[in-house]
Image (cartoon, rainbow over all chains, first blue to last red; front, top):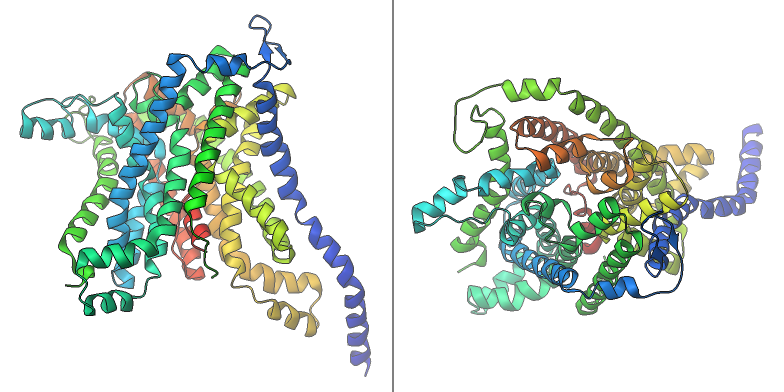
Length: 297
Length: 274
């Protein structure tokens, strides 16, 4: 009896508390909101505003007046060609990742569950381990008289000399970003029922036709996700060109860092960063447009 | 012919796996290679390991890195867990805004984000150093943790929480025993991932560390840019063993979730697949 009363009392109290709890529930967004606003949205807004400002290079005081001169400097050959090279390297890296990653993701998705787990681990484990050291490893592999060069010399009789060139940056980026392409494609392919392949084969479709008519359309969302996750960060890559570019400013990320940390021209550095952000956002919107509506889970 | 058994696909796939592992093998081999130019094999030595372990910069770098990784993991988890709990009861529109900010924090090139935060700290005279790096890392790390913990929400049945309340559990007890327990594998996995990403970061630390803080990746970055030394390979092998062990634990947590492990940004694969 006493227990029943206590239970009823508790239920009534919980009814009263429900409204209060809902209110508290909304408060849970505060950490995310504060962090995102203060340390993500506001800083990005700040550099956007200051990219239209000017700086006294003697006192390092950034004055604020609407000027587009920082963006005008961007039109000079040096910066424009670096930007174009960044876009080309990112495009090449994304294409190479797709060409290498698609067959791998497809192969993994067609294995038995145990083999799938082993192969996925083989793709993901390199991705977890010191990115810096793995990139540096390519300096050893690609240097003149290094393993890759010796192999090429043995076959063609010529030295490769690709270290510290855009080609070595493309290799390093493809290597680093490849798992990011494999994973979303795998997730998309893994959901395809084997019955679909069997049906296509039974209806007389040859492998190439099965691939084109069954695999490719169903893998499309994963492929586009992979293109976004690889292409966007690769365009702003800094560390890989710094190590494999041999100190030459080959990509836009290196110029942005240089303007900030070496030259100290913050408005110009900001203009470069904002331009990169705008270009990438445009790319993102274009890609999202071709992304078909994501089916509900 | 069944597509599954196509020999070209199989050979290409295994070649790509080889491509992913060759540089790691090269690091391992050169970490015990006596030939300091690392062009050919000069016999085995433990010299580089000894040198790495006695390098004072490496030692202080390691301590700094662990402090930063622990701090940013803690902050990221608080943000991601509270966000995930909020997300469950949020409106569709609010969820869309939340998801977009998570997505943006992951996808924006680190160079752009790091310059922006550096500029904010400069203008507000916020001191650069360990705290600044922790704040910077937690901005993107909390987004990865959010994706992973949110994936775990699917397995959380509201009926279980109602049942706990009906059976007389206090709200706190119901939260602890039902809600938190269901999210725990995601929290462990997310925490270990964020720790590893923070442990490995160069760009954000480079901007926000100033002259006050030099975590291990920055020490390595400096070594790589200014001289070639096999010591880097020895440090690399040790760092790899350490992070692989950590991630092994993360995978075990993921296995509890019935889902494959993923890396930084790779978490998006699942996010997108949903």
